[in-house]
Length: 218
Image 1 (cartoon, rainbow, N blue to C red):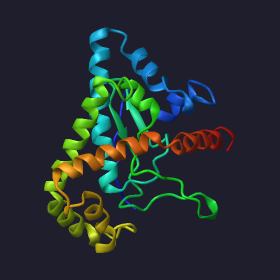
Image 2: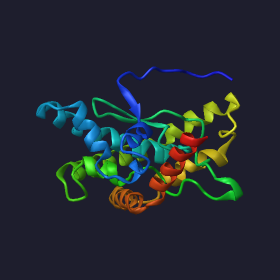
Image 3: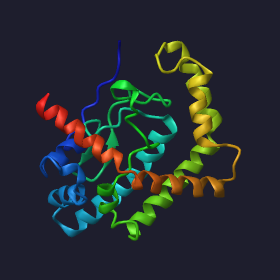
Image 4: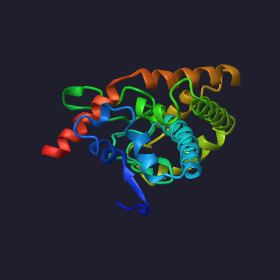
């Protein structure tokens, strides 16, 4: 088994950010915002960090959705002091998601977008939130225009013998997610609805809480 290891300086897992607010930190909306402000006390740097957070969140949401990234707990997502938000574990993808014992589904949304993320952007009524939504929807539509390239690249990777990329059935996840049969206008509307669906789901915060508990007492 081979892979690539990349060092990510000046960054912490979102699990660590949650733990700084205690055992119930996963349920506290200001947790990410407070951490970003603590690392960017100057108004200009704080504004830049919030902007980068919004843009990187948009990229994160679109990429993890289209690629079907799984195992999205809070030890696999990091945030840099600059505000950059990113995923670090790509062992599960193309819709091969994680389950608890007894077949209970662990991941119930297409990507992670929780209240503490929206809080950084000023909440759903904030200008930064609106910019995030526009950026994410635009990025999604750009990927739709390059769907055939993505599919071709993945087909070339099939001989690499990755367990979750064995043929067309796996690659169809991308085709289904990008929905080439609908217009860009409808695609934008659909992705914005998905953002709010993820935000309205409370299960991911509970899943992160269980993950923190397991690592605290495991």
